[in-house]
Image (cartoon, rainbow, N blue to C red; front, side):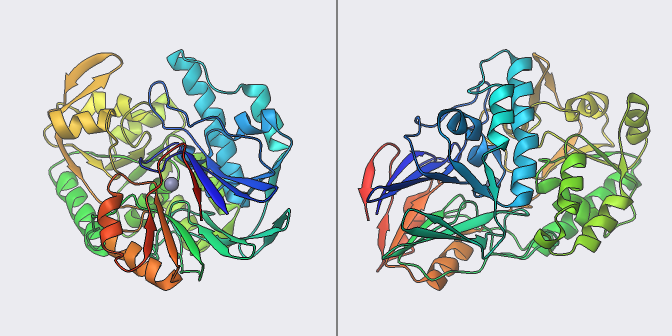
Length: 407
Ligand SMILES: [Zn+2]
């Protein structure tokens, strides 16, 4: 087999991997790096099929670009397909609002839907003389690892988490000859999840007791659900605003991809949703608001920050990694954010909490040992060398974008 990364090998974002064996070729993920404007991967060559690991735009954002050029199946799970639709439509709206050209238009997006071919975990798809099997990847509901079977076996993980959370079951290793695995957290460990959740709830209690509001910026897909499941263990008055509301409904429609649909349904029923300006005012009088965007780069969160940023009793509780170049990163590093083109000080308290949906360094090593591959290909990471060192005795490849590798 030969592989080539179109993006997302030595960096986190805009992932795309082409796999070729004889006359058969496939594309695994094809996403963009959300920036203003976004960064795109190398143009994809013609392939026989495309496989999408999960809905996050750095893995899925370029699907309509591919289906505009080629009449091929785009394979993914049903919750991934539904959330992909929502995120792609939103990415077009953002391009329009920010005034840059998107790599596809509304018509391409509508046409792309006809190419979706949904699979459930354990289903097989034949492409040429290769057989591809879907396995759960943890991470977020519907996230999939793909096992490619020819004369040898290759496993492509997409984004991966081995920890079972309130939202999803953790991924289990799959025996393979070649393991293509993400390495976002190479060299970094997560604090124990339960400890993070307790610290998070204690912090909110402190804020509420002093008469303040906890503003919790969260990604709509995965993180919002993690956060409201955690908040369901408390009695705070919680409001939800932004796209997370729609994602909640999509996930409830696919109960088999959740650890417990009952628990998620209860958690969703406990929060009050903001649907109007009046609702937003009521939310500001509540105790906690969960809203997009997770990196403070747009969405309702800015309106709420405007109202609490000078209030010493209130606080901003970040729940996700803040990518370089985002407003969230500016807050963390400089204590300021860009508010509709104006730099403003954030005078209220802010703090970061670890709810990561990616396997930490030791989790990755254990997972790799469990798959027991002859060859490990590390992708989707900025510190891959540290993980490579921990895999001494195995053949490890750190591919670069644009280069072909024969496996
Ligand atoms: Zn992801």
